[in-house]
Structures are given as C-alpha cells and as structure tokens.
Image (cartoon, rainbow, N blue to C red; front, side, top):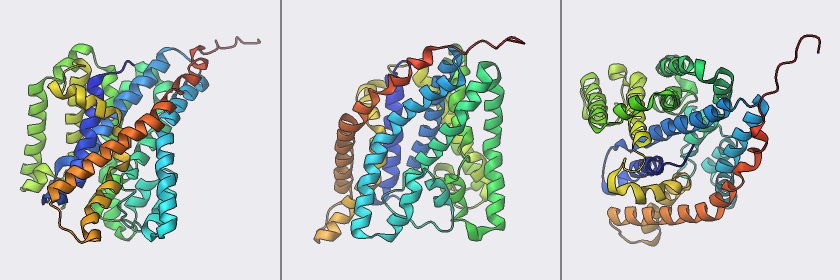
Length: 375
C-alpha cells in the first residue's frame, strides 16, 4: 500500500482532536467532540491493517510467512517508541512512588489497560491514559490477521458485516452486565467505551473500504455526503436525548440508547472521511494537507506523550506560584508535545521503520501446493 499524504493528514486530525479534548479545561470548555479522534484512529487502523493483510492474502503466501511479515511490521512500528515511553514512565513512577501510576504500569506493559480502565479497581492517572486505546488496537492486531488471511477477499465482506452488527450488540450486552453487576466496573459509559471489542465495528468499517469499488468510495467521500452523515448523527443525538450534550458529546445518561448506536454513527462519518482521503489522496484537507501530513507522521508519538505533557504544563503555574492564562498553557503544551513527538519520530520511530522489510523476503514464497494422496 503506497503512502497517502491525505491518510497522514487524517492521522494528524485524529491526534489534534484528542489533544483538544484533553486541553478543554484550559480554556473553560465543559465538553468537546475531540474524543472522536479515537474513533477516527480505530477506523484508520481497520483500513490500513485490512489493506496490508489483503495484500498478503492476494500473494497466496503460506499462513506462517504472511503472519511473520505482518507481525514483524507491527512490532517495529509500535514497540520501539512505546517501550521507550514506558521505560521513562516506569523510572519516574519508581522515583516518586506514585501509587496510581505504579498500579497502571503492569497493564500498560501488557496491553491490557482497557480492561483495567473498565474495572472498579481503576484509579485515574494522567500519564498512561492513552494506553487503553493502544491496548484495544493491539488486541485487534492479534485476531484480525487470522480472519483476513483465512477467509480471503471472497468471504471477508460477510465477516466484516457481521463485525459491524456485533459492535452495537456487544455494547448492549456489556451495558446490561454492568447494570446487573456494577460493583465490578467503573462508570458504565466509560466502561463500555474502553472495554475490549466494543469498537469492533469501527475496525470493520475501515477494513471494508479496501473491498469497495473505487467509484463507490469516491461517491461516499464527497463533501455533501460527509456533511449529511454528520448532520444525521448530530440530529439523532439531539432527538434521542433532547440535549446539546447528547448531540455533540454523548449524553451521560441512558437516554435514547446512544451508548449503543452512537459510536456506530461516529464510525460511519469517519469511514466517509477516509473514503475521501483514499479517492482524493492529495487534497482531502485542502491546503492544510501538506503540513498536516508531516504532523501525521509524528502522530503516534504525539498521541502517546500528549497527556503527561498537558498534565505537567497545567501544574507548572501552581508549582511556581504564578498565574498563566489557560490559552498560553495550551500553546506551550502543544509546542512541547509537537517538538518531543518529532524528536521521538526521528530518533526512535524512523530508524526502527527501516527494519520493516526484514521478513518481506520470506513473505514472497507462495503456499506450498497440497500433497497428493499417497505422496
């Protein structure tokens, strides 16, 4: 799959949306739609990972060779900067002996933060917050390759449709379980949001783009289609909850069962945005595509480190006994996050990415033909 600058631009958009969500308190905003950046990342991952796996499936490789190629590329893409980040956090946690941080670390190291986050044992810490979504993605990477490689193009579409249906069903079932046994979970809405496989439909929507005819993808990526889908999602939120929070946030109540269907509505909008990027690879965000594409290359590190930097910057005025406007703290936090993310990309991510082709030589050999009877 060739590099698409518009896809990089949407990576940047996802990171900036999440950053805006976590800095809303600095400018006095009670709510923000920035959390949708996580949904955009999930749909993007479904598209990119699905595309890569279909390439491997089309080459008729042995299952072992295809899995080796796929997982090696995931390892060199994800682990290096993540390990560097966790080593630093672990060292700091041991020095300052922060209980919440120390309790969170084993889950971050094992990519199970989402399960911990959903449990009643969870204690919020402002450093490892983003690791729950990385855990969700990693769990997707463990299972989805077998779905694509074993089913191939012919049977993948029905499987993806089943995953799309399964998403709301899983959220509905989990919500019922939490209602019956609330003592084992954190807040219901948060638990459903972060728990494993509750976003399976997001990944399926992304992967489905790879199976679409180019003409259909181009039609779905038209501006008026995206605006219409966004308007419908907002209108449904308003009509079912009767509140602005329900329209632009997600209602903190059970009104309108938005907890069940709302994420699917957001995922559909994200899918349409990615269709636009795929069908218009150089102009999806207009003149901003170039700069945004550059930021998009740093988006993984940006996402990983933004929350601890926001926390440290927001605490600095209190520590030094000075008053600083919230908007200025926001700018400082953004500049620091961007600068450190670029450094991590250049010094950690980029060198590691050069190793991606290591298993590709082995992944050029087709499956061995079936042995004849009596051979």
